[in-house]
Length: 262
Image: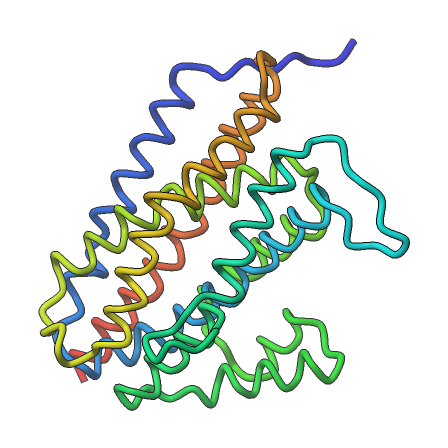
């Protein structure tokens, strides 16, 4: 007989506690200079990139990207996920031109003189056919970056759709507005010193809080329905996704403290 998972109260409490830790992480207060922000962005850009693998997996599962095209059953989920893809992959940059959020982030890095060469080398290796995890090892990416990207790609490639939804919503769309608000409230850098990065943060606070987050929640609630075991699956996957992000921030925080002590 299959084991029926029930979302226990302590699991829900754990998820809420982890979200609080994420929003109050000391990494945000550690951003005291442009050099600190450059170091932060050199690691965070990989999380900006790997997010799209979660989104594209959901687009593949909830819509049809094959030829010949065939309609999928959940028309609402297909509509919502395509809306999110449009905003993430083809948003409008401050200059009025279409740009993905990764494009905007890389422009923000260049604006403050952050080194993009590590990420550029990674992308070139992956485009050339190397597996992403092998590429991360080849370029000497920090362990916390390798672990985070590895978790994201494993979920996007191997986990069932419901677990991908949980990572996408709870690990990304539902926590980013509070997390980025905390960054803007606690860092010690003037917004005028990094205008493109501030645009990136505020754009995510806006779209994730007002549209993408609610859309993702609607999709996942529709998939859960009244099933207690599906809700428990989502809760466990959400816990794992937030723990992965906390480990990334722990690693970035440690690297910032090391930089400041040098």
